Length: 462
Image (cartoon, rainbow, N blue to C red; front, side, top):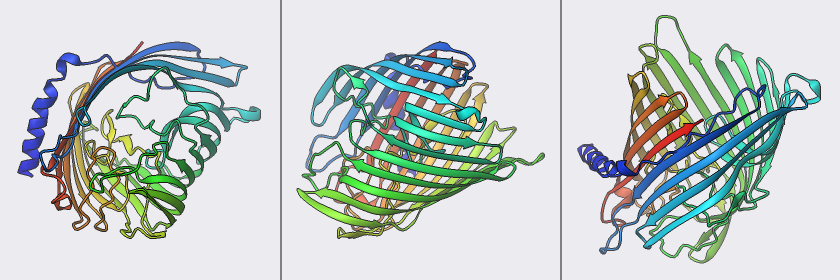
């Protein structure tokens, strides 16, 4: 742990060098009451960096940094009494600096982020809603899916029972004029693919503030990145295509006694079935997926009238280290982001900012806390411990290029330190610094055991 804290301090000094280039990032506006038609202009300025584990043989260390600015306008309008139109169009300017393979790229794009119509009174029924168009498709904790995609969905929303069904597909590439930007903090890597989704959910409030939910999610994934892995010691997305179905049972709620701390809790329990095709060293392996179990459970205790909080989380995904025609481990959907607000108003990746793994063949123990330093300023500190269910050289992490050695289950541990502040009701700044300390699973794979990441972002809307 001492080594981990020292690494965090080093990364703190590294990130302070960004302060002169703080961008003006506009926070994405929240959908407001559709009874008013309005324009909203926003800006979002963000700098990010990631420094990977140090490779062997004096090879160049993989380092990525990005400066990104989004300027957008959101327009929504009520028409025909019960129908609501919403659009979000923005211009993105980005400069990416990739040390390995030595690339510096600046580009710009025009993006249609939202373009949909919605009614909350379909056939003049007050509990029936319909949404059609490009919008955000996201489950409650982004554990199953989270992306902007073309959707047609219907929803029945009552006091105790909510039902929803939907179909989604990337019908059009809504990014114009420019190459695909890195934008490492967004889950837009598969927008140009032919991937498609179907989902259904039923949620029942069985007691006040206590809910049970059942979900069914189907993913037909087509990987747009057709590169082949050349180095078995470097991690990559080896899933070429897949047709998978998730069955999910969830519980969540809040205990709010009058004289005791407030307790929030959740439990997601899932299994997956289907098939997938892998690419590895020029070969293709077709697998039948009879995935075992994936779960995520945790709680948050709020103290001092919700001015401070302490949380615990445990996530588990069964594994299968054999590359044969039958896979019995759990897999997360490619569209999952594992990103949510837990304490305060900071949205971050709750499996760790630096490693950012998908939940597959992995056990994660997380302890996180936050306290309000001033009226609009929150301090966050999160700790993560990673261990594979089975020792396996194939590891799904969004950032690191290195794969484990397949001999040890110990992936490592990580810390995230963050500050989030609301400058005004319409502007805020977020600063996250993370460090990952690799475990014995990376012995013989990398020369160094430490990776860093950071994000500094300013958001505003008018």
